[in-house]
Image 1 (cartoon, one colour):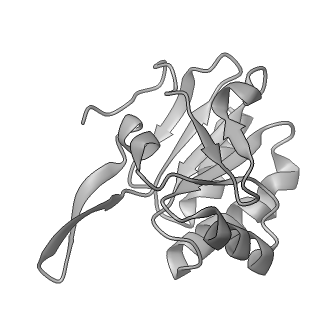
Image 2 (tube, one colour; image 1 turned 90 degrees about the horizontal axis):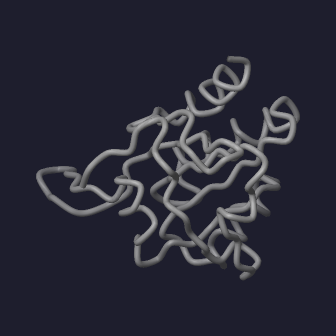
Length: 152
């Protein structure tokens, strides 16, 4: 799967959020949005990443934050409620959006190969084009990368 680069048009999507409501990337046109992919709600790395973003949300102005994982909306809702995240968590159960962003990849653990999410983040500009791309981002780095990119 080819990787996306800054300047590329962000692949469009419409997915259900933690409340079961559809959220489309097109709905954010005219403002920046951080779209980040994480493997599984309420696991240590994913929690650190989401809580880091929650903690800087007051510093990003009008920039929206949207998380995407294969988890169903009910699991996303529990994750949001447990940590008071306050931003959309979208369900991509067939990983079609993850594939479009090049983050559905072969992984291995304990000698076993499987397909899964490569933790990544994308800053989409007001025009729908990618401004920044972070593949294989560390959970703790996501919020700092966003703040650095916005400060320019």
